[in-house]
Image 1 (spheres, rainbow, N blue to C red):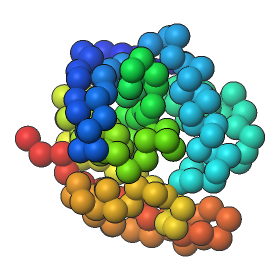
Image 2: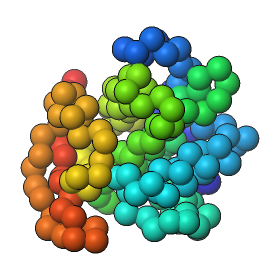
Image 3: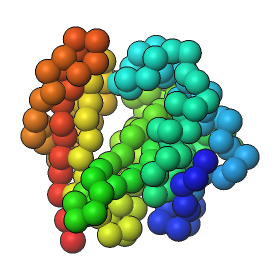
Length: 177
């Protein structure tokens, strides 16, 4: 993976809204395979990502490594249970807008891990110099839509029939000072 770790910040400990203790920090080289397995399981279920199962290593590297400014994982009892990456959504003069992608282990869904990751990504993206965040979500199959809206993301566009006839929503929010 080619993501740099400079902007991921030092490891931090949080307790989620669901009472799960997490260590959140930059992806370590020895955790790469755990992240691959987690992402492959989500792709296999068809939840929120356009990649086709089975997930090829090259597709994983393209999504999680290529262009990612940093990759951060959530560890619960030493095991990777979630992750996010942050990268510029656009090149050049529009590079001040971040893009992010998130995964959470299915066994911990609904326990606040996703919320902890999204909140952390907004802080770390701001520290890295981004002033807004934007991403596309496949409309019906993304389990995190409510969370994003609760955290202040707004739907600013719709891409008709983006993935196998399903619309994608474009979410955006300012990251604030």
